[in-house]
Image 1 (cartoon, rainbow, N blue to C red):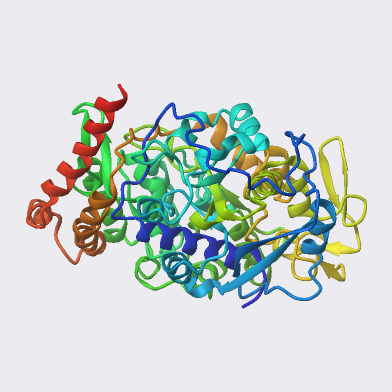
Image 2: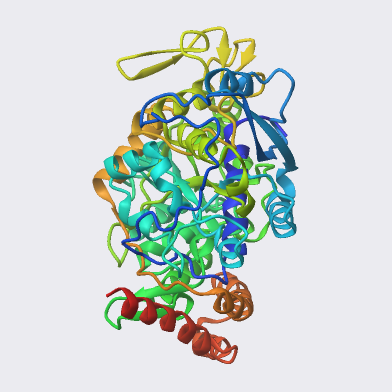
Length: 556
């Protein structure tokens, strides 16, 4: 597979989807609590730790130490002997990493097996919110909230970037959180609609601000290009339904989570796939199919990264499609070959609004890490916490992980990062003719660590100007949906929820697609809801609402 950003983002999306599917039966966020550090059982395991470690300082173990870490190998960028990133980390921190490598293709399954069997390394990276719940419930991982006092960078940037409430929402039924996430100074939806703005201009359609405006533009394009199906997804509908759902007042696709949606008026959780917003969303997309405006293959064909939608975009069969910032490059490269450079304009627009308002997904974290329960017995446990705090949250490490060594691979002046001419970052089309790729050849900008925590300046440093404009447009014109209130489940409830949630979601996924494609008439909506009810939907909702009420009573 070629090494460019579009397939890489496809892989990231797949990982998040897999993580969400694995956690579908679980409550999507754990309990909010005023918390505190809780019980600190670090004991005397402070060998090699720094007594004066503080935020924005370099951690350096007082003696050489080795920590074990799980490492996911991306097929396009396998670790090689030339990767200097680990040498640089060791030189700065006195820490060497003993890696256990697993392939990306089945990373979630292998990770689960290693943790459950007790054979996992101490440090488990690439953890998204929700991934930790099953391991927290079984006691296989540590409550990191007990040890946050050893992580000054984490605490500093949670406060500076106003992320405290979000961190509290990671807390489980016992009031503790079991992973620390990647912190993002700004958060915008990764996937949205990419449009051929030149074609929208040609037919007299403005950049759409709402789904209705997008439909109007598609109608005009269809009239001009009757052989086209101008809108496509490319991710079996899961991407487009995810970012569209918020505008309709529901959740769907990749963002379906555990399937519940907080009804503010009722003061309780309802099942998203039965609410009016979900029905309206399904009707909207069915209407696009009826009028030949939606490429149905892009809602049904499995996405293997081969670029079917990209080919249709290049061929003038599709003029708007789901994608991320890297997909802009992918589409542009394809259009260069068919339309020619300078003869088109691809724009990443803010997710369109709808009946629920100009609303997008809640502000999000990126991937962070867990520690296995055995890690606390490591003689260098406190040093491990300090090292991870530096690696994940310090500005020094953030720059190192993304760009390499200042003065060697890049320079930085007035907040602007410049990759030195002898080095490239092919994944982001930076210095593509340079002989040494800082990712493939040196290990910087790798998918396991880089980008986990980012300031806005760092995020913008490696992205194209068009993506910076996208960030600005989302932050200035869209409102993140408020997170749902906590409803933490205990271990027994998590197991029960899993048994109930899986068949419910299977029914939802099957019928959502059938309704959209017209294989099942929308007149059977009530019958579909009845099918969900017959699968003990009410029992599932009672379980989650009961957990919410219990938490509210316990915590006020």
